[in-house]
Structures are given as structure tokens and as C-alpha cells.
Length: 124
Image (cartoon, rainbow, N blue to C red; front, side):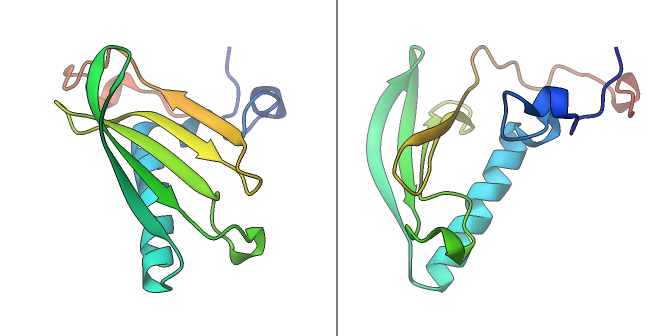
């Protein structure tokens, strides 16, 4: 079945098209929001230290942004759990301006450098 990534059918149960839910997209969004908040001196990072997600050792970092939605940040708070071995985020929790969990992403059993060639992907 061919369907556009931003189809209303796909977005019915998600805040993002599937092209915007990967680890790379999250890291870019997190970095841009935190850099902007740092430059404006209106956000901070909190290192919560070591933890565990799905049996994996992680480092838990929380980004806190202004609570005012109109400042243009993606969220109020983001908690990211970075895998101690790979350094990749394997769990992300996104909290809205009411400090309620709005999104959660978890990546389990990641296999890196699987050798998949670019030609194996078909663009729609």
C-alpha cells in the first residue's frame, strides 16, 4: 500500500508523519530548541545520572524550556535516556506546557550499521 507520510490516516493517532519520528529527527529538534533557549538564557539541562531502560544502561538528561507556548518551543520539557553503549537516545518523553506527557518514543533492539544500501529505499 502506498500512502503519503503526512496522510490524515497516519496522523490520526500521531503528532508527526512517520518521516519525523526517528532518532535523527529527535536529536535535531532537541538540539535546536535547547540551543535557542540557552542563547536566550531561558532554558536549562538537568543531568539525572545513570538509569535503565528496557534492561539497558542509560544516562538521563532533561531539557526544560519556557512554559509559555507562544515562545515557539516544541515543548515545555523533554526527558531523554541515552544508551550508555551507543550514545543514542533510546527513550524520549515529551511533556506539554501543562507538564503532561504528550509523546513517548522508545527504541529497543537497535541494530546499527546493518549494511542497508540507499538503493533499497524507494521514495514516494
